[in-house]
Length: 438
Ligand code: 2M8
Image (cartoon, rainbow, N blue to C red; front, side, top):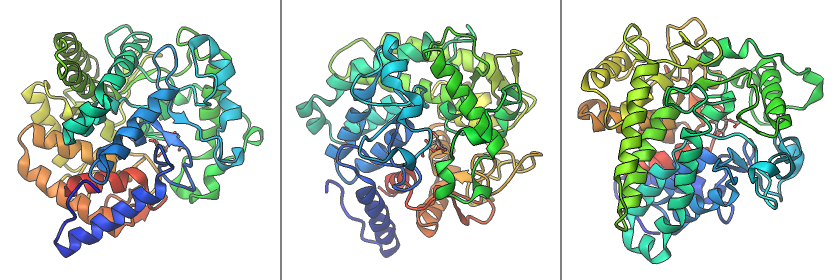
């Protein structure tokens, strides 16, 4: 153990509970989000988990972040799932025999001996790497932690800002709802409506073995997810192939910017030049505001690259850019006003919901269509602090600490009642709770 154990009784209970989840979900060189529902390594989960794990064991946190890029593809992409070969195929769908990465991704340099998915997830990794380094710089230097990760993180960001600038406007785009991490957000309903679902009988949903169907995406959503993933795979995971789904997401891009700033720090630490990364972060920030900011809505929206227009769905993804350091002050202030308003209830509800409470498709229980998620709230807490909203950040922190423990470290909660939803003993809920406690 590298962190002091808290002394206050409630903190101690939370600390113990969170530590238990992280110890139970540890698999030797990485952490599963949940042993039942998600029994492999997930990309952005690992980054959030490492941020919390550093308080228990810096070595494990470093290991978590080192393991993931071992599965990086030659074109720079870090896959959204790294499969554990010891887990039976039927335990999770889509399984390695669906993605067939080592064959279908061979031309793009997919690993030959590790099976992965072929899509990506939000780039939280450089940010997590920097936070883990800073926690124990001496150990990090001794182990060459930053040196080993820096070229891989740079290649990852080059991929996202290069091949994945599908709209040509200076932002990165996602080609599947799973890539943004908010699988069934109402923001995808419009773009997804153009996708022909595969027949339900052509695959088996393993998620329903572990989760209530009212809290998971619908079969229609799944049919479309599978169609998109199949088409992408059959095109050899090429980003130049015609793509029926391509969207610029404000949360993904905000995390890329925050991570690009972290990459500047990572580069400068051994004496390298931070300027190219700072310049890229500034260019991305300009593009984010130019392409995704909606003054009318007082928040960022997704841009659907098919018709090239903003999607009018108000998802919490549109508040996450609050964590971008160089955001114009009037934009940051407007975002906070929107978060505190009737749509997102910051300061009045236990946690900020994943989607506009007053939106026509709001559902307090169904996955990313309303429930509150701890990673999004953690990002907002960080953003509030960054822009000087200390009181709001303190309130959100206290609320997250209370609900993380009370919900049994739930995957997500009803944003109005804070009742637990989804799976329990969920990795990033425990990790980020621990981080806020420290
Ligand atoms: C959820 O997504 C996976 C697909 O990647 C699934 O539903 O099977 C999302 O909540 C995603 O953000 C998360 O990374 C993943 C594992 O926790 O689960």
